[in-house]
Amino acid sequence: MPRGGRILLLLLLAALTPAAAQTPGRSSLAEDKALHFLFGASCALLASAAAAPAWRDSTLSDPAYALRVSGVGLGAALGAGAAKELLDRAGFGRPEWSDFLATAAGGLAVAAMVFAASAGDRQARMSPVYASFGIALALPPAAGLLRRLSSRRSSASSE
Image (cartoon, rainbow, N blue to C red; front, side, top):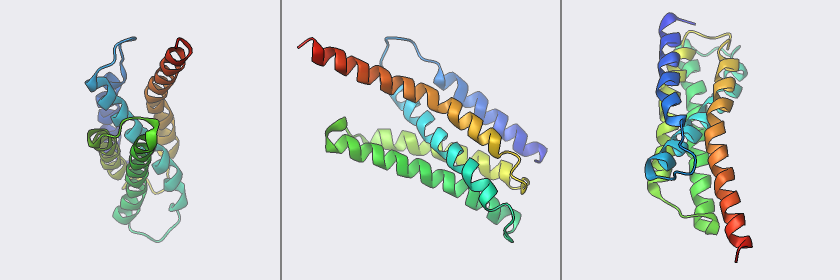
């Protein structure tokens, strides 16, 4: 992978790491949007990790290959964000455009980094890195969801 791709990936990780830090017991608008951003980033990384090896041996040019790999990631983030807001609209939460936009922003940020990193990585050596960071970035949103579910369960049992 070219040096620029590695630097961009490191910048992405440095930018996302502080957003993952949470204060226990404190729910705020900024934390909610950060969790949506991380969810979008995680979806994009995991989908890109799966897509990179799929087109490794194709006859695509390097930019076309990178565009496909990053596009699959962005599409996954947009699809996951839309599905989550549709579930909220169906009664599982409160749908908000700003939640969808935060999820899309996370996917877009990762797609840009994946595009830069994949342009010179036709052997898909970065695929395990994408998957590892995708899983790591999924942990804070998953913890937030579990916290929300447990607080609903405890408030329902106290009634």
